[in-house]
Image (cartoon, rainbow, N blue to C red; front, side, top):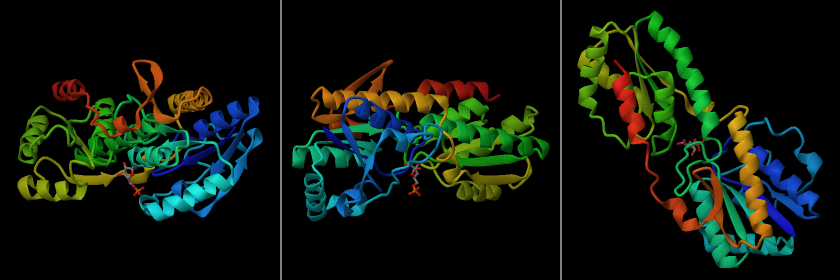
Length: 321
Ligand code: F6P
C-alpha cells in the first residue's frame, strides 16, 4: 500500500512524532509512505516526497512539522480539488493520513467522500477544540509553554505589585486559557465559554489587592478579547490605584518548541492507530481519544461543540483568594 501523509493548518508540536510513527510502522510492514509538503497546497501542486525510516530519525523531539504546513484556501474550490485528485492518482497513492485541526479534518472528509479514497485524520491543534476527542496533539506542549511564560511574568508582577493581562491562543475557545490559568494560579481566567462580565473585573482586582495580594494576573483567552483593549478599559475604569497595569500577548511562543513527553507519546499512539486502522480497512474518519481509548470517529463529529471543564473554572475562582 502507498500511503500519502500530510500536515495542514497551524503546526502543532507532536506532529513530527506522528509522522515518525506512521513512516516506521509502514516500512516495517513493507508499505510505502509519501509525504505531501505544505498540506493541501502540496496536494494541488504535486509536491510529493518519499519518506523512509532514516528520513524521520531525530524528529521525535522537534516542534513544528518536517512536512511543512499551510492554510490553503484554494482547496475549498472543486476545480483545485480535482487537480489534487489527479495528482494523487498519478502518484498511485492508495490512502491518505491527514494531520490538522477542524478545518483540515473537514478537507479530509471531503476527499474521502468525493474521491472514495480511504482517508484517516489525526486531530492536531494546540487549541484542543476538535469535537469527539478529549485530546488533540499539541495542546499539552502549548499549555506547558504558556505556563512557563506566566510563571516568569508572575515574578515581575509580584516584584512591582502589578496587574498583568496575559493573552493566550485558542482561537474561539478557552481550553488553553483554562488550564494555564489553573496551573499558574491566575487571579482571573477570562474565556469565551464563561462570560465573566468585563465591568466586574475592577471589583475583583480591588478585592484581591485589599486581601494583600501583591499581583493580579488575568489569563485571557484570545476568544474572549484582546489584551491591549482590556488594559485600556481597566486604565479608564480604575487607573493605576491598585498597581501599574501591563499586558502581554504570548502569541506563537505557545505553538513552538520541543513537544512534551505527552505529545511525543500521544503523537506516536495516534499515528499507529491511524496506520493500523487504514490497514484494517477503515475508509473514512479520524482517530479520537476518549477515556483512555483510541477509536475511529466519523468526520462529522469533528465539528461538534466540545464542552469545557466548567468545574475547573469554578475551582479556580474559589482558589483565587
Ligand atoms: O489554531 C491554532 C492557532 O495557533 C490559534 O490558537 C490561533 O488563533 C491561530 O492558530 C493563529 O493562526 P496563525 O498562525 O495563522 O496566525
